[in-house]
Length: 233
Image (cartoon, rainbow, N blue to C red; front, top):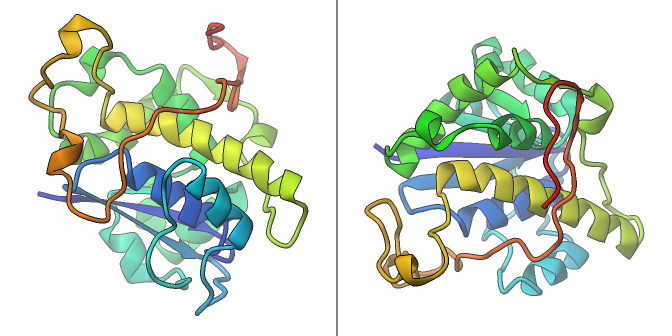
């Protein structure tokens, strides 16, 4: 069955639509990615600076306008990613049952980074999305994350530099999550034929974007206070 990822920020015109577009471009049609805001600027479209940054990756912003977060959205989502800890708390306040499937985006990226291919298994992308919350929660026992490194700052109405900083943080974190949902095929001769869990670009539904590789150098997001650290690239 299809799975659903819900991405949440404040106004739903900046951070969450960017994360939605980036993740949607890296997952199969069996994974539905949507976004909403805790204080949505209902009726507004994605901010122009973010739209331009997506265009630089060959992508367009999500169709439609900002939506207010609601209880039915939360109830139907298999995985919920927020931009800040306070937004994560807002989600859980609306629906306490969502506590074990709600993470900040940077938190989820750090938790799934350490997952082994064996843990992820060879299930479909839809099944991986449904499995990720359980696996990510299990990682919490091994990885103590710094609370101050779990939020993506809101650049709305600020300088272009702030938009670029937020975009970069989101792009890197989304790539970490996307690798767990849809591992990229290997490069080289062995990549000539896609594996059983890889959907070629030509088979994607129109309008879902194209697959992309992270176009910026990896940086730690976020690191652990104790335990394992990410090895340099």
